[in-house]
Length: 285
Image 1 (cartoon, rainbow, N blue to C red):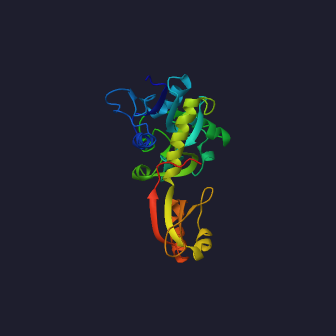
Image 2 (tube, rainbow, N blue to C red):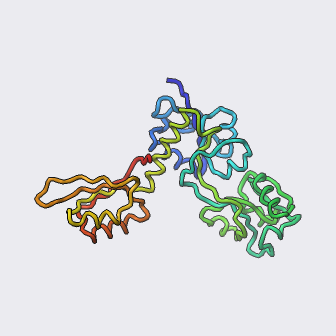
Image 3 (cartoon, rainbow, N blue to C red):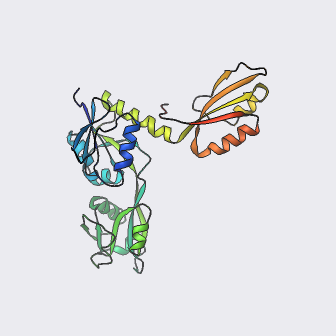
């Protein structure tokens, strides 16, 4: 079967590996990597991947060369092309920050009138400074931005801050957040195309499942209401009567991972027993 749906994915950088793991979990595992071909089939017959630079993903999707794409929200905003974020993917989270050297007298964007600002994100930078009523000299760089102020080539930079280690190494000080970013799934339109909607829902199910756990427990009949009162659920827990000497119920529900330990503690305190926690592959509301 021909590849009816092509998904543009990063060929390099911090988003590449988590993107490929996400697609594999959604049933679209690539048959081989970008070292062999730029366009590769996946385990889903009608879906293929296009490996390209993450900054080029929005333009490739907008041109129609790819049906969907995965890249950073910062690259989407920088591109300026009319693609639509269909889904935030929950990884690659970072901030785009304005930063200066530790000894710089600059403490905010308004201190940079007429100053030199280096960045890969020229369009974002222009909009940011316009919003603050400031007109610095903005120039584009293609390599590492962190060294530019130390070389004396710029008074400030706008760049991605993830852990902050690289900026600290170059003795830079973030002074403002320009925008928050993370990996996003984009298309020219997220609705109206059956293939696009199918892929979006497959990936959405995996993203939803990553923050959830399935919890199974046995609850004596005389404690059932107490336990149910502390259990979260999407539409309601599944409850089944067990064949046992005493009245016993099996209760199954999905629990957000961030509150899992609290829920288990409270349920056990109220009489739940034989508690089992399972990972989920997909959650589709």
